[in-house]
Length: 278
Image 1 (cartoon, rainbow, N blue to C red):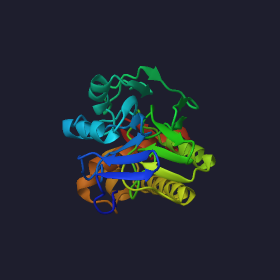
Image 2: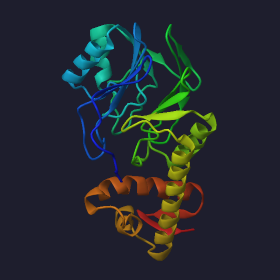
Image 3: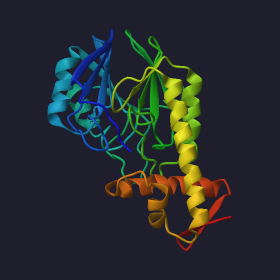
Image 4: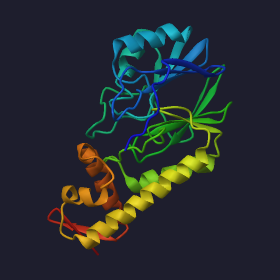
């Protein structure tokens, strides 16, 4: 489920007025760490400050080199937004994003002063960002299109070198696939993920993700047909034979998302916690 590349440099200028910092939270699920992006050089927006890691928040302020006016979060998962409140308190910056849902694995400290909806824009003297609502990985997930470069900053909607976990009930596989098609239709020049390096062939990567998810769905359907009346956990080895057993707890979450999608599509049903074909 993870194939991240080598360690990334902690600070990189990607384009004039677009900089990336990597939070010191590497792991099997976060890869090299959470990417924090800085837009502008005099009046600055910070995207995804990451976990509440004081040294990372201090480094953001040091590297900004100007007035941090806005702080944005792609979504309120623990590796993306907990640093927002402390950074906002230290800088007085306005917080923007979609409010955190009252759901497991969300950072309820993320409370935007300005709630964003699909198509809303942040217009600053040096840059402009457009919010693209991309539910699926999280119901409040936003990508941000940088107008001047036509780059899309994708958070955990699309990441480099790995697929993301879709964790019901807040995560939704149908919504995720629909959001991938929405992103593809934007025809952006590159994807800048929340984990890993810049992706220069957006259509190719998005097509691969959709194909991969649909192939996994076919495996789910075949497993339920061949092994009816199993629980979600019992189905994991049949669907995720290519995944190390130590990752089964994560695989089970995405498997549940596939099963719910198939249930919505009237292909499977669950009775007393066990699945069967309709």
